[in-house]
Amino acid sequence: MGYDKSIEAFQEAYSVIPGGVDSPVRAFSSVGGTPPFIQRGEGGYLFDIDGNRYIDFVQSWGPLIFGHRDADIEASVIDAVQRGLSFGAPTTVETDLAQEIVSMFDTMDKVRFVSSGTEAVMSALRLARGYTGCDDIIKFTGCYHGHSDSLLVQAGSGAVTFGHPSSPGVPADLTKHTLLAQYNNIQSVKECFAQSQEGVACVILEPIAGNMGLVPANEKFLEELRALCDLNGTLLIYDEVMSGFRACLIGAQGISKVKPDMVTLGKVIGAGMPVGAFGARAEIMAHLSPEGPVYQAGTLSGNPVAMAAGLTSLRKLKSQPSIYVTLAARAKRLMQGFQEAAKSAGIPLETRVRGSMFGFFFSSKPVENFEDALENNTVTFGKFHQGMLANGVYLACSAYETGFISTATSDEMIEETIAIATKVMAEIASKE
Ligand SMILES: *Cc1c(COP(=O)(O)O)cnc(C)c1O
Image 1 (cartoon, protein in one colour):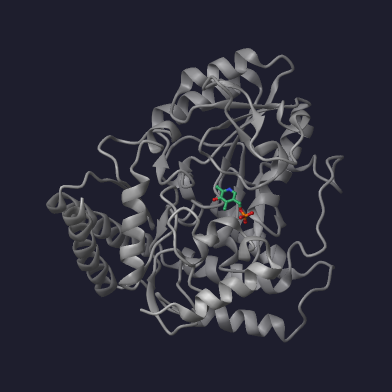
Image 2 (spheres, rainbow, N blue to C red):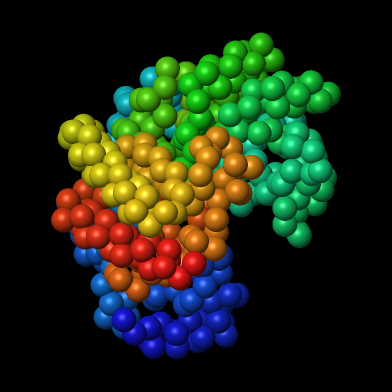
């Protein structure tokens, strides 16, 4: 495979865009090499500008559950485009999509649309703070909730502590209300509650974490979180920007019995268009402007073209619940194949599947939280990623991401990927 055109395009991009990319992970910094510049997608495949074809397990980082260029979604987008790109005024398609969503989630009476996952979470936090009158929030190390200020936080010296900004440009004043706990560790959450002096507005987590690799929360942990939130008058927010409509139709709520107070959505909800959303019961949502005093707005929020894509995608998903069974079977087969490949190469590998989401760590012990995840072998991951890419398999370019199966990812593609993984792992083992 040649990458000449991508190398040139990357250099050119570099001269006018910081790092050559509009979102850092795309630069391939943690795996090395040049990111292929994409020309087009078709079903389960991506094609780059050098003419290379890849089986795509990234799917735009989750949104494309029907793969590239799904005919129904494409038709609804073209239809919407032909009536105008944006009006900044109410349209019925927003209500249609909102109705679909609230009818699926029994924890949501109302939903507000925004343009990204970051915006959804940022707005949900403001609403939680406005509703409870408390400033502190609890989040977990390894959970990603977008790039808004109060969530760009890393742990200090102890595992449980008030957070420090993890990026220059974020004032410490803005992160001092963010308490950090350890995922799947209820004791650490209790300590956060104990440390908070002014009260905790919300506990936010990815109930199926996908941004430290794939690390689902234990049911018992979620139950205890729910109880702690109830005890303290704190809202429990599920950030399902990734897992919503991915792990199963209604995300973690379809897998676990625990119910959150608020849910944030994104990615699949827009089917590849920029859409985010947050929803809760009516009593909470009534605090949002213009019904209530908590301000939140967006010029392009509820954009009609994006809403049309989301509506078609969600209706398709809802009308074919067996999709998730098929996708999960393929994800399981893929991870089983990776396991066998790793075993015969003598490489330790931990795998996880939740619906259409899959994850693997080059590690010999089960991963329960971010600290465990950090123990994986990122050097082996880098070699594996490069080897797979060179053989036409497009995997997320970081060891701390989740992979995705789309309805366009066929059984044949899965078997082909397993065969390539077997070859690549054997090569890695032979060079060690
Ligand atoms: C991707 C993601 C976000 C951020 O969404 P953007 O659309 O990238 O702003 C927030 N939370 C979770 C769980 C995500 O996976």
